[in-house]
Length: 212
Image 1 (cartoon, rainbow, N blue to C red):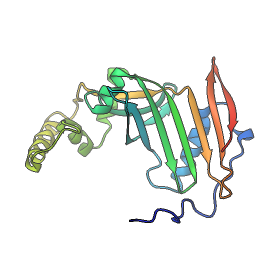
Image 2: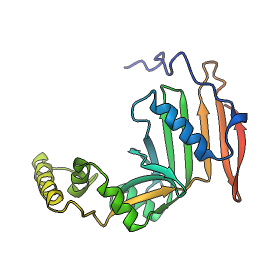
Image 3: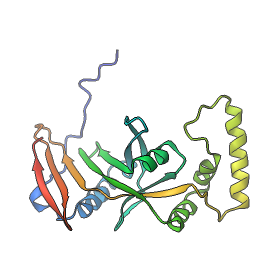
């Protein structure tokens, strides 16, 4: 059995987080932390997207954050993928960012809405060619009985993308997570971790310090 205790969790030097100096808007603090993480860790834009399936059971996977703007935190996938189907039935989600190299975690949760079709299409066409080919292969999360089927589907998708470089799948969707809660967690070696929660209230936000 692998002994999981004793492995180091965080580097010796950790950033200092003073909640009293945090901006009034969680988006501003998130962008500050994301930029800082990008200077120290790989894939700072990787995020765990959690949804609920048709039976009410939680489901989670790591995706890539597209950007952050007035509409919220953006991720993208096919509307026919498991996560797309789950969001259609229950348009709520949680996003979890974890940067162990900085001892930081950000948790967001709230309603999800699809972007306009032209915005989703632009998102798809901005993807690298290999990523566009992957999207056209389809069958995400279905059982693969023969790896040769994947090779054949990939070859057909690659041909399609080459012949139709300006076409996006109708199912490709950019989703916007507009959180009503956002929590920022800073690790501390003395275990007195610093937690700050933003809670939406009317047109603004309430900031609350939480116990570790």
